[in-house]
Image (cartoon, rainbow, N blue to C red; front, side, top):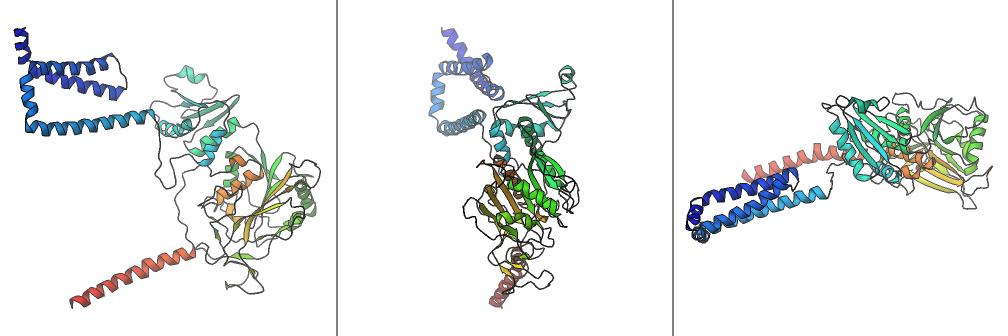
Length: 515
């Protein structure tokens, strides 16, 4: 026994070092591999055993060392270090067990939009997502970073990957596998994605889980906005956005068809420049009276006879050009900016968004429904200092008492009323959205501020897809700043006049005091 004790005393320093090495090795192995296997358990159990042997071999030296002043200070430092390591380990454990994301970007660029979340909440069937990525495919990380946000929101989504180079047999089991992209499958529906952005993924999800595809018709034949053109005045951007939300988009020429097609979910009339024929107005009127839905936009410079179509509901496009001096863009007072909306299904999620309407006219209700079954809701209004300028040829922007119509003016409004013809179903409703401007949804303006949101929300409401009314999926758009006349004047005054004058005045005061 004496020999064993003597031997342990000689080898005590080795036992101490081994205890430290075993403790560190066990902790590192667990933190890296997150597994409590035999090796990890052996190291973590062996460390205190070796430490105990070290103490037993040198009790006097250990006691003396523990009573030194330096040891007390060192033990305090060691205790703080151990506490710090314990906190880090605990946070790492909690982070691995409880997932939480926080998006610190101003526009929440790394968070799913409300519309994408809404789509995920309504998924009621499994959706299998398969990524076909080679080992060196640099886009795989971008796809998976985005998909993780979707997978966190819905347990009905599953994700797997196949390397077409290393697993060719698996890849060949799919018909035309999208190399470098995603394949979404649900039942017998499939969709392919080649772009790692939220718009593409949400659109594909809608298409694989939707039971039906509704049809949106754009009226043509009167120099309306071109839904297929890519110029700034055309409507291809909103047409593509509608397709992304699983709508089918078609053209409608009422001069060559006797009725509005029965599969029309919504008819869009986008700024006609020539008058509709009497027969065309009659066909549109018959469609709306039977519970049809329409988004009608008419610019102030044109009159296509649409007011004749709207008489049955006692609404119309008013005369004049909307002027709003305190709330307009730098382009001029005839581009009103709206940042407050009346509450409705269309605008309920637009808090904090602005819309602007270049060259707009008012929308008016000139009578009331005695039965109280018609609901007319102003959506976007100008400020109380605005007016409808009746002389659109004048170069002077001023309100003329008795001639111009004082504000606030309604620039966009919705109407819901029971179908008046052909049905006894009280739930069958006619729905209309009127906007006194078609520029706001053109390619040149629809991606600015909240114009696109207002347009898409209006179409979704008309198509009775209220669940789709939300801020839509974000794309990678350049950041732009739009200033009203008041804002630009304020910045000019502060930056160019006030600050330099204040510095000059301060310098003059200092010079005078030192003189």
